[in-house]
Structures are given as structure tokens and as C-alpha cells.
Image (cartoon, rainbow, N blue to C red; front, side, top):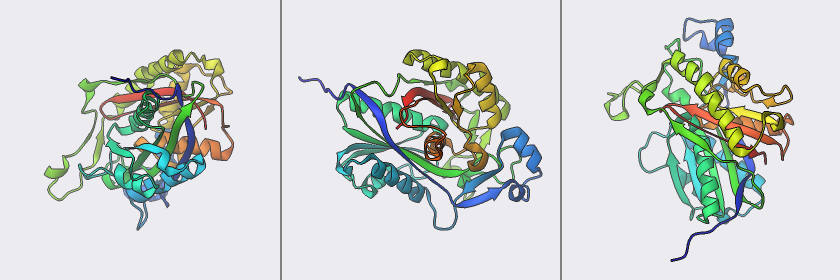
Length: 326
């Protein structure tokens, strides 16, 4: 029996993104809940978020982001051997949305599947893409994080309604002669499975759309202590010191969480930090690639720089790694 052998390393070749088009300001949000622009900004850093408009769907956002990433990669779509969609807002248990996306980008022959790892989903997918390429199961892998969280947001819940947004981000991952995706640090705390949850399973919802619920205090403490430690572990496993890091792209959960993580990480001031949440909201599995594309498109980050990416969320699960930006 022959072993499966692929490229020595993998890298992110390109990135693309698509935000929902409807802008929901804090002022509009405060017509739904008893709150204020000042309170929302102090608690989260969010000034506005993006929600889908009429005609926009999870598939539309994911397809647009994926097509941009494939076009920017410069490769023929038929070289894509696998398509991975990370999402918690594709409401059909089967079939998955990934096969539709594979067809839409011109790779209908690709292995295609969905994963549900909440806000860590994109980094889970990136970990799998890295492995698939290095064992020879695919030459190129398309990884998409996409969410329409506005559809599962309780707009009367003062503790969560203002948090969530809609969007999609995608990367093409391909072979590399040099290390460009560091070892993954991933795992979970299953004993806290219900810390972030849904109000009801879909079959038992009784005609009412289930919505996200969250124990915010527990999540904040977990993210700013345990996840900060995992971020340092990802740097250590990659052999990268905080002084060598150029960019930090955490899951865009809350600006206060990001600030607290930075205090724990002791990163140099030169490190560019993603703050996409301020006008996008928390987009779960889409947040890391959305923020990555924004930093690169704006010129705040540059191709070839070293970035730490990490996602964390419901499960409770987390995943992170050091990458070279495309």
C-alpha cells in the first residue's frame, strides 16, 4: 500500500469577502431594544452592523466571497480539490451548502462539506485545508466562513441583539515550498457546551425561529484568559515571538475582549490589530477572513506579513494558528 503524499507545506493564496448591504446603526438598534449608542459602544465597540437586505442570502454572500477569492488566486477552478464551508446559519441539516458553492465557483468535482464550529469555524477549516494539502488529498482548498446571524438574532434581547452581523469571507489555500500556516492550536471546553446556545432546536421551534442565547460574563472571562493563553501557545508552536508578529486577527466578538487579549499577549505597539467589528458586528465564522481581507485591501496589512489568527465560540471551541498573509 502506498501512502498519500502531498506538498511539503501549505499557504493562503488569496482572500475575498462580501458584507451584507444593509447598514443597521446603533440608533436603529435602539428602536428595537432599550439601550443607547453610548452604552453599546462602551460594551462592544460596535457603531453599526451589516444585515442582509432583500434578495441577499447566506448562499449569495458565500458565493460572492468565494468567487472573489478564486479569481484573486489566479488558478483554474478545476484545480480546487475540496471546498469547506464553516457556518452555523445554514439551516438545512442536509444537503450541505458547500457542494452548491463548489459548483458556483466552477469546481463541481471537488469534495465539499459543511462544518459547524461557530466562531472558530474558519480556523477549523483552515486547519483541515492545511492537512488535506500536505497529505495529498487536494491540491487547492477553498475555505469559506459565512453567516447570516440576523436571521437567528432575538431583536428584543437587550443582551445580544446589537452584537451580530451578516457577511462572508473566503480563502484559497494551496501548496507551498516554505512553512506559511503554522501548527494549529485547537480544542474545546465541552463542559461549557451550553454557554452559547439556541433557544430551541429547529424541529422543536414550533414555527418560531430559534435565536442565539449567551452567558456573556462567562464568555468574556473565557475569551480573555483561556483563549489569550491559546493565542500565545499558537505563537510558541509556530516558533514566532510576539516581537516578530506583524498582524493580529482575532475573532471579532467584542472590542473589549480584543483589548483584554492584547494586555495578556503583551504584543508590541507595531502589531496591526483587526477591528472590523466596529462597523460589521460579530459575524461568527466569517469574522476572521472578513477582517483579513479588510486589512489587506486597506493597506493596513501587507502580503507576506506574519499574522496570528484565532477564533473562539459556541461549544465552547477554539482554533488558531500563525499564517503568512496572501
